[in-house]
Length: 457
Image 1 (spheres, rainbow, N blue to C red):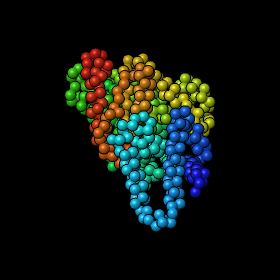
Image 2: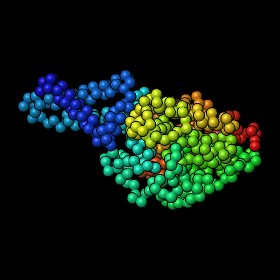
Image 3: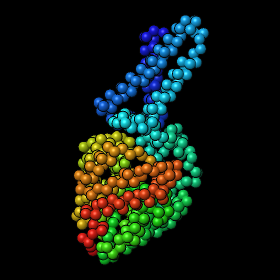
Image 4: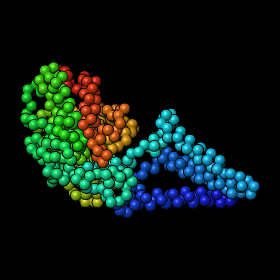
């Protein structure tokens, strides 16, 4: 076999691999339009293209080297061919195994740093891809996932989910609002939700019952967020909000406040825009001292998906500035949701930044302390650049920042989830969050007067 033959075969192999990747992307997309949308959001930065070319060249080189070695073996003399070849084959296999061992050993690749370390880490950790994690998160409260298709690890997760395992939107505790909130929790309702007790108070919160007007000398906090803040998958009294409130009242009651109340306004699936609406339409009536806005890894994606949904159905959002952002991006009311998402994705940061600023403005105007708290979700890998990006947006908006990204450090993450097919934090996970949040509040006591005599009502 000539060098030209080897090069041609290597290129054919690489070409076959490329075709397989394209076919796989088509197979995993719901439609041609979705596939085009998927391709259109690829971030074609010079460094990403360079990395892709480097991987391609290395793959081609490896294939070429293997083929060349095999070609040399084929051209050995008949005498040499009669000699045992098992030793050479064994040596090559052992060498490859040793190479893979060193590459896959965290003690080795952790010393590399940069993009190479991230790439090797992603390859060696058994976890969902970002897209599959997003689908899984959406599937907690929407029937959006086509599990009849082969979606790699996502299929494995859903194939193990019991048939009696229900989505929360299919229960009596959730109802449609026919407005921009889309759905809400039903007041004064108790259900058995996949083996846990889930109760709501008269105000439609997954929480204790509270009076609308706080008692004198009470420090009241309005808590907003999606399903993992509501306590999806754990019993009443097991979620971090309940645990934190109990600890504050046990250890701090009377110094300086008589009591502490954390009102849980979280609802599964809510984006930052919906949390803004909740604050304006519901939370302000309860006269909180502070609002705790619980954030997560997919903040931007959540606001883009929500905003695209509202535009696609021509909903009347009461925010002219948001509509202006959409129009500048080319998104118009009535277009399909997929197309609108595609147009809004490049301005996702702008949408989220505006929402954060609006929450802070409304809070300050009513004498409410705005606190932004990052709480990691367990179905998505933590990326420090994403956390830093969200922290920067929140800080620029005027929030006080609390970062709980280390709450699960040194823990077996599989021991913190509700089930293999449900990546919400279980009771243990909520205890870790409650503990870390309490410590972070102590560290910020000069800015968050939970433990000070200032602003006592």
